[in-house]
Image 1: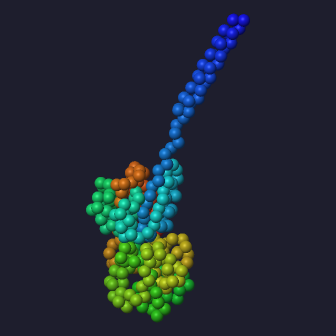
Image 2: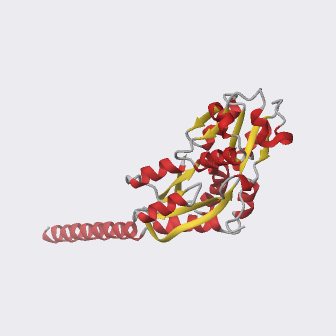
Image 3: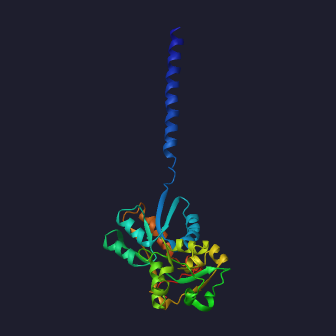
Length: 274
């Protein structure tokens, strides 16, 4: 009888030890499982003229970096400057000029060497395809036609393309004659929307928007001579408070890389320095 009890006790101990060993193996296996890759979000504040070109470029960037998210907010460069100066949570700023990124440098908000030029923009007059206005024939003088009641431009107070439109009007001696016809968009994309929707008869907008599929299909444009307005060199900045500075740099390198250049040219941008 004593032998049976002793054997039962030994068996119970072995079962407990074995269970602990198996459980230990389970814990060890879980510990050896690699954690899922960390997902980072790249937050970009981009000038409105980049809407279609950047959306297309980011398709390729996302495919190459599937573990990372990219969020883009489009707007006027001047408004972004004000927001970034107040601590807005962006990692990369893409302006429609070079002055705003440099102002961020002066405020100590850009990482060392973080300002870069990525493109030169161009300005066009855009009208709906069925408009009777002979924009191709008359160029900027078409703005004096009786049929032109409203002219859409971006707000010059905070949009570089608005300042370029205003400069072109002044350089051609047209500003005083048409200033009461100007309809101001919050940014150049909104100015383009005014022209496309019929709220304005003509839009003085970025070529990159005129070449977007919907605008190209529904309208005609005439390129304003580059001598009529200051050079539209567009620049960006890598911000010091970026969540993932390395991801921000990878995006900058992709934007400046040789594979992106044909896409930017397709939307009317030329390379910096040209």
